Image (cartoon, rainbow, N blue to C red; front, side):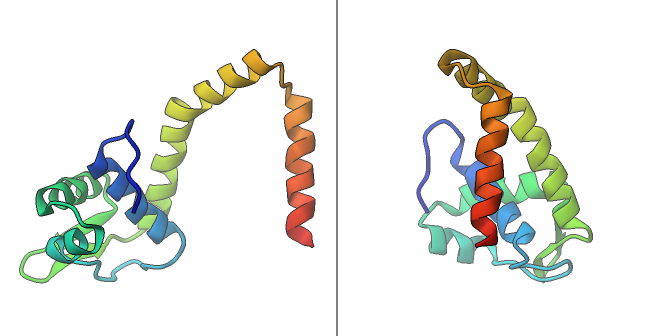
Amino acid sequence: MEFSEPRSIYLQIADQIRERILQGEWQDGERIPSIRELAIELGVNPNTVTKSYQALLDWGIVANQRGRGYFVSERAAERALTGMREEFVRDELPKVIRAMQTLGIGLDEVAGYLARQDGDKDK
């Protein structure tokens, strides 16, 4: 895993887990790696993973079953998608809009680009 500077490592780990849930790697009710397992896999301190799991607990994406471990919550993918969309609109979209304005890129140009991207997917 490559960690980027602007966002805390624990949030990057939480994002990675949400993405894995959204991609269907982990389903509702499925056990996810223990704190120690994930810390070893990612090469980070277990305290960092603990902080990530706490954020996921707070967001309702995972649940802790004492003595059994952490499990994907019911409707976790829906919650993950909603949260990630809200974060994108709040944190990333304003940056994109500022860059578009600076570079003189209009919505029509973006729409054309997106249409070409969709056409490439069909091939």
